[in-house]
Amino acid sequence: MADSDNSTTLPFVTRRKVLAGTSIAIGAWGSGAFAGDKVTGEASPDPVLTVWRQWQDAHRLTERLCREQQRLERQLVETVGFPFAVIRLSDGEPVAAYSREAIREVLRLAPEEAAACANAEAEFAARESQWDRADRDIGYSATVRAEREAADRASDLLDAMAATPATSVAGIAAKLDAVLREGKVLEDGSEFPWPQVRSALDDLARIGRHGADGVAP
Image 1 (tube, rainbow, N blue to C red):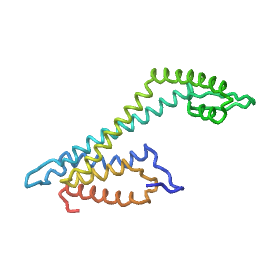
Image 2 (cartoon, rainbow, N blue to C red; image 1 turned 45 degrees about the horizontal axis):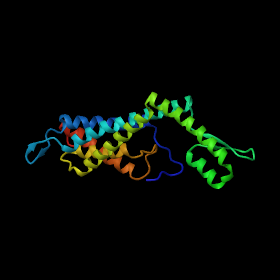
Image 3 (cartoon, rainbow, N blue to C red; image 1 turned 60 degrees about the vertical axis):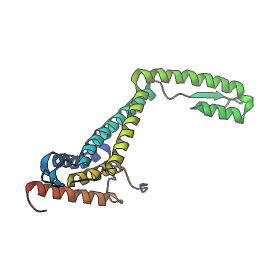
Image 4 (tube, rainbow, N blue to C red; image 1 turned 180 degrees about the vertical axis):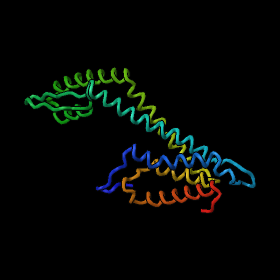
């Protein structure tokens, strides 16, 4: 959902601290705190938790690769700069173009500037080649592709989690945890549906703790 104008997104480190306890709790539930749960009369691991652990790995990898590609992009910009060219028009006015499409648009609007646009195309190609060489050297595009693949896998696992019936409180909590971590958790937590999701997850955590201690919630 769209954020309000005066809202801010919770920084990654802070958001990670907010959600870390939930992940730890779910992991504990899945490792034995809810061993008493029965499915058709027999102890059985919740299939949602298996998918959740796979999703969690893919989600963490996506976040790590996102930070890495941002770092590499900054490095590229600082060392070689974004590809661009200056179209020096016949009236002496320079026009900066940051894509071939921009150069061709100038040519479309001012066919008499064909020579200037041709020079700009050559300048842009040279800068683009410089960017591509630096890109290959540091692995920026490869990191972007890896991030997209990890994000696609996380998305597929999120869909699989939603389609998998939970058989335990831990499984339900895992689904809510994934919603919170995939969604934009706002700093004040006041916009729908985050307070409601957080409340439900807190309830499940409380029930899980009491259940693990053998005390009624």
